Amino acid sequence: MTLLIKDCSMLDVVQGKVLDHMDIYIEGSKILRLGRNLNMVADEVWDGQDKFVVPGFINGHTHLGMSLLRNYADDMNLQTWLTEAIWPIEAKLNPKDIYWGSLLSMAEMIRSGATCFCDQYYAMDQVGDGALKIGMRGILTRGLIEDEKSQEKLEETRDLYKNYHGAGNGRLRVVPSPHAIYTCGTDYLKEVIAMAHDMDGVINIHMSETEKEVEDCVQDHGMTPIAYIDSLGMLDLHVIAAHCVHMTEEEMDLVKGKDFYPIYNPSSNLKLASGFTPVQKMKDKGITLGIGTDGDSSNNNQNILEEVHVGSIVNKAVNMDPKAMPAIDMVRMATIDGAKALGWADEIGSIEEGKKADLTIFNLKSASFTPRNNLISALCYSAQAEDVESVLIDGEVVMKDRVLTKIDYEGILSMVQDRMNQLLTR
Ligand SMILES: [Zn+2]
Image (cartoon, rainbow, N blue to C red; front, side, top):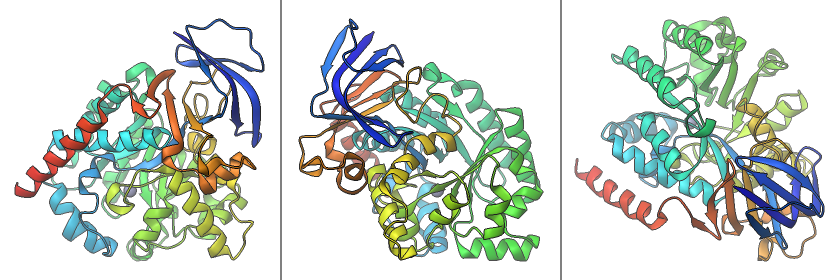
């Protein structure tokens, strides 16, 4: 299957430029040629006039199955929220709830321009099946919390790796994932680190999300969280580190030049009042960050465009500097830098010949993009999810003219409502 998108505006995110009158020629899962007035014959030709083609957005941290708990418990502090509200109802979720909840999150992501995610949850085979069904790319990570089922959970990660790593033409990857340093003991963390070395050398974990986490770590281990994981050998791996809100300057120097990638979750940090992630300072130190939505009960949506917007303006306010985190830096966080954070930049994150055709196409005939003064500014400050018209993942059209092509969107909505009604009586 070949597709030619003719005469579009295209984001070159590496250069930080918008290129006009571009043709994009896609063969199978890949972008084969880019240029003006390409003389190529394709099975299908799309008119790119009034369209803005950007790299598919990457949601670097989420808990997809939590969408059933959207608006279920809000306005509480993190520990009370987790222990008294979220964990008790989560314990009643069954695998099919997680399947449909994850599909709802994926539908929401695609409809707001995301093509790839890094998910941490459980019943991850259900998330994998959902992603294969709807056509998404993503990293599946089984969240590991130490309890009487610790070894079973490690076994689940091994099974997941065996059954889903590389599935869907390489669209799915599997990575070991301790939930956090405060939910896993030292020996258990070491076991997971060893497992990550045996797999692909990548690990996914929540890091330094709250002040309490940092204080407890200093008390229990005599060092700050990132110094602690370094003492366990975790920094020899590629670390996808969600949050990093309370990272010290010494810790920034420690991870600089290593494969350590904070994932910024602005809405979640703000809503849970976790604090302000020192994003500009990290970037100034040369640390590459991704960006994520976090789960639906701490955001409460899966719209990565909103994170780009909020992340930018909150950093300007906190730094008292309108030049902090400019539009292109935020857009990179959701594309090429997000791809680096997930260890996937060889295939995704930018529109380049030879890369995967993971593309988000905006309709420029909308209020948010009118007048067309600066399309990169528009992406960060004014674009809305409704402006996303079509989405390709791995060369496959997963949304065309706002209609999901591989699954019935209305069907997902009613399934999720039904399952939540049942869950409340369980
Ligand atoms: Zn999280």
